[in-house]
Length: 182
Image (spheres, helix red, strand yellow):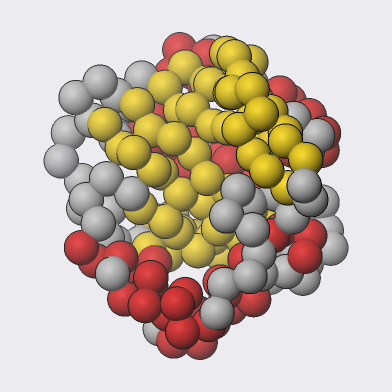
């Protein structure tokens, strides 16, 4: 299936704006969320990203052909960021990236982002599976993924170094048939 992933998508009340089309204010908003301590602590690359490096990353988004990130929004503002990485249409697989807006306090933002990216992946792109990896001590995220239907598929032992300690990454997946039978 061919679909331009550099366009905006709307699923219910959630709009996904592609990183490749964000203006500078939106790009800076992504940077503020990404570097917020509540978000940065779970990133494998850590939280210290200079704004200039982030803006250079954003400028390269139009060139990307297998990694697509979106700013999720609704009538109340920004929900967070959700991404399809390592998109492999031949095999129907993509890896999910997600973080909710740490500046909005209401519950359910992550679920709404998951709902939108699952609709994009399964219903629009025809993917077979969405995969993700999450640090094993990120218990809130793991519980949210399980509630959404993701299942454990394995782990990468001691894959992340944080605070001088090694941490495992839990691998999880959601199949299209599981999504359709929810």
